[in-house]
Image: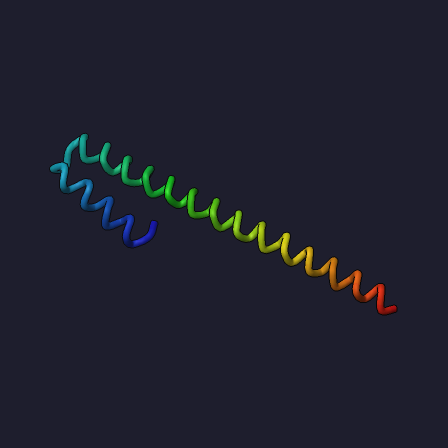
Length: 70
């Protein structure tokens, strides 16, 4: 866990008075953080997939030019 999530977990726990509700709130905080991490990872995967497709197209174009020049 990162420092910001640890701070949020700590705050969630103690804001609820060290009770069962506090533990439930901690679970919510961790779940929210996990969801955001998945969204961020998905966006990055999409960006990298697009970049790979662009690079592949550039390589194919360069290969075609090389074959034409030969």
